[in-house]
Length: 303
Image (cartoon, rainbow, N blue to C red):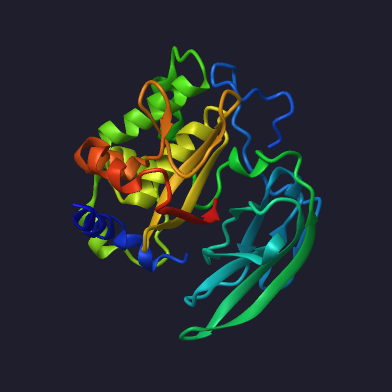
């Protein structure tokens, strides 16, 4: 059975193998409190720019930078963020001049934000770089706002759905459970997308809701966006289940602190689980045996 489930996990998550890979202050962490989603903005107060790219680091205390590429090109452009402890995150950057948001999830310390342009094949050249010292306003700052991997705004359908799903919720844990159950009950695994997904794939969350289908990256990003839109700090986690690349979430509530690795509430206790497993593997029972205490989940990235 365990070997069968490992093969099942490999099939579910093979798509992500080719991926490259707030200020809380007066804002309550209780989902019942009126919450205005804090949106990233290129404030222009601290900017580093050359002919190739512009990096706005005005709001690093809130856990993000914004980057845009200034040249038109058909070649690939990448953003690499190196943070404290030599953590390294790599992203694709659009080449149509739009700002994109990248989180600073490695805590306080020195970060290097670099933009690289493709020269030929796998060779890239440095186009621009800025080093910044970051002191986050609090540990939740990077995990309440949209970013490239968790992309939404105040008018996104994902925000409206989250508000509907959590309406009448009595506390944060109730809201988390409602969102989790909604995603599990309404999103099916997209085997066709998994078989054909290309490098650089990033979830389009309103499209996922419309199609009601997605891969593990979509599941995790969707749930992350829904919870963040309700003021609940949520990490989109990328790592491994066994030897398979996978995406899941961790969430925070004042009642429990950080619920790490993945979540499933059985009415009595939080258990290790994630939305992809729960929606596809016999309502989670077989997956729960494989996931067990969480030893098979190994996080490598937080977004």
